[in-house]
Amino acid sequence: MPRFFIDTFDSIVAIDDVGHELPDEAAVWAVVRKTLADMLRFEHKGRSAAQYRAEVRDAAGKSILSGSVLIVIEKAPERKANEAIE
Image 1 (cartoon, rainbow, N blue to C red):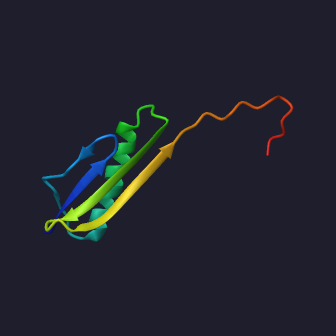
Image 2 (cartoon, rainbow, N blue to C red):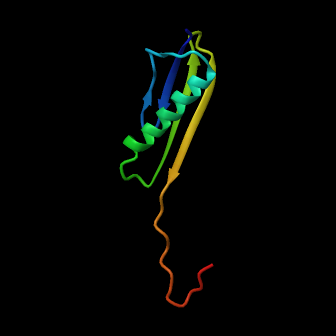
Protein backbone atom coordinates (compact mmCIF):
# COMPACT_ATOMS: atom_id res chain seq x y z
CA MET A 1 0.00 0.00 0.00
CA PRO A 2 1.37 3.47 -0.85
CA ARG A 3 2.64 5.72 1.95
CA PHE A 4 1.67 9.39 2.09
CA PHE A 5 3.12 12.11 4.31
CA ILE A 6 0.88 14.91 5.56
CA ASP A 7 2.73 18.03 6.67
CA THR A 8 0.66 20.56 8.62
CA PHE A 9 1.04 24.30 8.97
CA ASP A 10 -0.58 26.73 11.38
CA SER A 11 1.37 28.75 13.93
CA ILE A 12 3.95 25.94 13.76
CA VAL A 13 5.11 23.60 11.01
CA ALA A 14 4.82 19.86 11.60
CA ILE A 15 6.66 17.71 9.06
CA ASP A 16 5.29 14.18 8.87
CA ASP A 17 8.25 11.78 8.88
CA VAL A 18 6.16 8.65 9.61
CA GLY A 19 3.42 8.83 7.00
CA HIS A 20 0.18 6.94 6.48
CA GLU A 21 -0.36 3.84 4.39
CA LEU A 22 -3.48 4.61 2.37
CA PRO A 23 -5.04 2.64 -0.48
CA ASP A 24 -5.98 5.47 -2.84
CA GLU A 25 -6.47 9.19 -3.37
CA ALA A 26 -9.98 9.11 -1.86
CA ALA A 27 -8.47 7.85 1.41
CA VAL A 28 -5.84 10.62 1.27
CA TRP A 29 -8.59 13.22 0.85
CA ALA A 30 -10.47 11.77 3.83
CA VAL A 31 -7.37 11.93 6.05
CA VAL A 32 -6.65 15.53 4.97
CA ARG A 33 -10.26 16.57 5.74
CA LYS A 34 -10.07 14.94 9.18
CA THR A 35 -6.64 16.46 9.86
CA LEU A 36 -7.88 19.98 9.05
CA ALA A 37 -11.07 19.49 11.09
CA ASP A 38 -9.01 18.29 14.07
CA MET A 39 -6.63 21.25 13.75
CA LEU A 40 -9.57 23.64 13.76
CA ARG A 41 -11.20 21.91 16.73
CA PHE A 42 -8.12 21.58 18.93
CA GLU A 43 -5.86 24.46 17.92
CA HIS A 44 -8.15 27.45 17.36
CA LYS A 45 -8.74 28.17 21.08
CA GLY A 46 -9.99 31.69 21.01
CA ARG A 47 -7.83 33.20 18.29
CA SER A 48 -9.86 35.63 16.21
CA ALA A 49 -8.27 34.38 12.98
CA ALA A 50 -6.33 31.32 11.95
CA GLN A 51 -5.35 29.48 8.79
CA TYR A 52 -4.59 25.77 8.77
CA ARG A 53 -2.94 23.99 5.86
CA ALA A 54 -2.08 20.38 5.14
CA GLU A 55 0.23 19.36 2.29
CA VAL A 56 0.53 15.76 1.13
CA ARG A 57 3.67 14.15 -0.32
CA ASP A 58 4.10 10.67 -1.70
CA ALA A 59 7.01 8.37 -0.72
CA ALA A 60 9.18 9.95 -3.42
CA GLY A 61 8.57 13.43 -1.95
CA LYS A 62 6.32 14.56 -4.82
CA SER A 63 3.56 16.96 -3.79
CA ILE A 64 0.19 15.26 -4.27
CA LEU A 65 -2.36 17.74 -2.93
CA SER A 66 -2.93 20.41 -0.33
CA GLY A 67 -5.90 21.64 1.62
CA SER A 68 -6.53 24.65 3.81
CA VAL A 69 -9.08 26.15 6.17
CA LEU A 70 -9.34 29.82 7.07
CA ILE A 71 -11.43 30.96 10.01
CA VAL A 72 -12.05 34.56 11.00
CA ILE A 73 -14.34 35.53 13.86
CA GLU A 74 -15.01 39.20 14.34
CA LYS A 75 -17.26 41.10 16.66
CA ALA A 76 -19.84 43.09 14.72
CA PRO A 77 -19.52 46.84 15.00
CA GLU A 78 -22.08 48.40 17.27
CA ARG A 79 -25.04 49.97 15.53
CA LYS A 80 -26.85 53.10 16.56
CA ALA A 81 -30.43 52.58 17.71
CA ASN A 82 -31.89 54.32 14.65
CA GLU A 83 -29.78 52.49 12.01
CA ALA A 84 -31.69 50.33 9.59
CA ILE A 85 -30.89 46.63 9.43
CA GLU A 86 -30.21 45.48 5.89
